[in-house]
Amino acid sequence: MTQPAQEQVRVQLNDARLVTIRPIMPSDLDALRAFFAALSRATLRLRFHSPLNDLSEQVLREFTMVNHRAQVAFVAEIDESAAGHLPALIAEARFVRNADSESAEFALVVADNWRRIGLGTVLTRILAQRARFTGVRRLWGDVLEDNQAMRGFAHSLGGRLSRAIGYGQTLRLSLEV
Image (cartoon, rainbow, N blue to C red; front, side):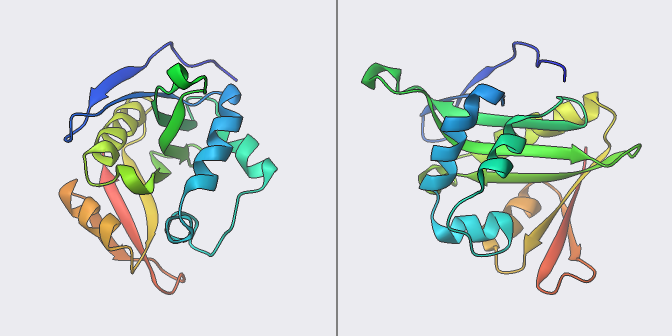
């Protein structure tokens, strides 16, 4: 597994709050566990397409173990170190490239109280930039039909939504990068 470049970017969101966006690392396991535990059940259902109370330890570990080429993940964090805590994760975006393909499946989740202020857009643009760098030309992801926020988000990014074959109430979001 290759290590990410020491890349991080500090971003000011539409509401003037500052966040840091950087590649995920194995040392983020505890922060990632806390992030997913803090999400509402509705948000977890929209992200994972089924009702969940929490994620297994194995899934959490896998989410932190990326190779930064075929599997790429970024997190957004706020600095709470003044209170003696680790930085808190507030969003996570990733793609997994299909073998020898120019497409990759992507996923995005933003903490409930950090939505509609540009964070998802910034994360998706950073993810798309990395995708282009690694040879990916199209990002795609399945979205529950009742996920109005993602449907609007897809439209704002110029993405296409189509019926996902064989997945019932799921739409396929495609973004050309």
